[in-house]
Length: 328
Image (cartoon, rainbow, N blue to C red; front, side, top):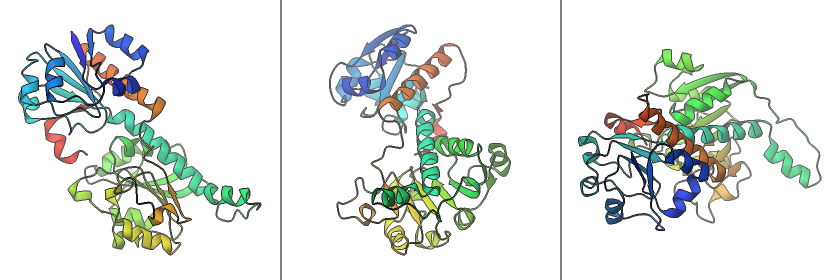
């Protein structure tokens, strides 16, 4: 079995360490792209010749018909990243080539980050830490435990569902908004299915995990943000486009809400953007997904799916053509 890693050298080395490469070599003959930077169509076509398995990642261009003609026996594309939209083409589906991504691995890191934001924000550690450095010692009237509160989750994809799983370790009520999840499925997850407005109005913490689609663009607009409780915490580790940022700034300037924002629209925000100076905003530079050692979780997910493929088992990261319209 010929396995080709198409991503550029630097990208490959960021994700796949020596132990991952050794695992791949145990599964087949491995060919790597030793050139720097994202490969163009010509480079992809050259690399993929005779491949049975292709591994792509961030920076890879679409697998066009011209590229795929060089690998008539290609059976599986493993995308060592999130959305497969940058690499998928109609020709890929027409040839019956299976596709996977690593959103489950990415989602775990995102959910863990959201949980961290949840705990630290409820504890009011951001404000108390600043005040303590400045010589104060309390008061702690704003501190809350992760107990007896209502947590709202918007989106039950890989990240959202893992966030729900993590939150089930605490004595909290979990409300879930996802139009593609049934009441029964929500109950199985340990959450209550609710409409978006209900989630916003009843939750002490709202964590956003919806995909960026035309239908979700600025879904948290001025009218919906106004529904949120005073002192509620809004966490966004998904995409900045899901929030009407001007409307959020208006609410934050009133001092009503607290926001933890790992994503903005655009990224980065302007140097003078209010998100950078408002005292009730924590702004981080898009670190919720896999970074540094977290990237190795992506490599292992890809290898695990490849091993499952060789053994005839289901692929955890498989993406189907009919899912493309509802995936980020």
